[in-house]
Length: 419
Image (cartoon, rainbow, N blue to C red; front, side, top):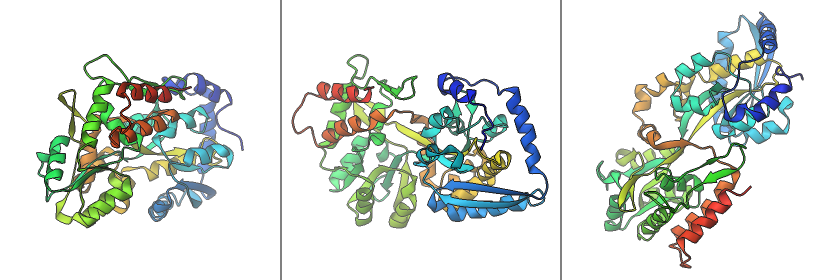
């Protein structure tokens, strides 16, 4: 299978486009696109393979049907769905690009790798797609200013779930007050400190930084900083203060849900994937809000979060690139993002769909939107996760060995920034 982009494109992306604004497409590529448009002629047989989450199959089949109805006068379609998790899409695709799906859903943190490998081409009608979607989702689908994928969802983040039986809207503004109420009622507040994804919440709005270097592999990190208004040890001490509360419980998702269901947990940090279970369990007492502030260096710091988006990509090696692009845009259009919310509860990236009454009535989606002001795209190299998990787990355990906090922070940062 021949690729529509020349081999030179991969080299160009690897050296420049990954962290800068991509250039205009070459004239011969545009000519290729014009020639490929002839593939949309009437009665042509078009075969497409679509990868998506297994849980999305029924939704996608419904979307395929409407797509085929829309274009039935132009082609005969055979669209095949194959289950593939968004989180594992990159690895599956990179194993054999030419044999990969024509259209695929993937997590936004895989975008840079896919672009660098030449698996994605710039979207032709980028200005139109950008204008239809939330700015954060558009940013997640771009390398530099160049749009390489279609925004699909805007709901991969975290916020605070709480039981309204115990908290009012003022109570949930600070972690201190949340813990106080939990202690008074002998209940638990949960957060998963074994996951660096959640631990970012404590560092993200302090002026201490972490991110991806220009090589796209290694990280920079100042979480052990000793200068500035807030130092690394200030954050570590704040985490220790929280962990020492008898009402704080460091636990993963199953522990959070089990506690909500048996009544031992009255608040916790999680994401939209638990919204249905929360509503079923708590009923009228189900509440959700942006993350609270926490006490650090004698001041209140708004907790941050990583944000994430699901995107739809079109394989640059697709034999039916034009039709694959049309299908990708169809899957991600306003109507089908609204349908996705109704059937799967996933937050839309489309601006109009996100503003719809049904979406605005969702406590979890509203909380995520409110938290988005304090969120950051997850652009982190692989060495980030384990060192942060080790550090935070020790904080959750109360630093039982009494090891100097600065030494632990230095060790963590050394691991994060390792080559």
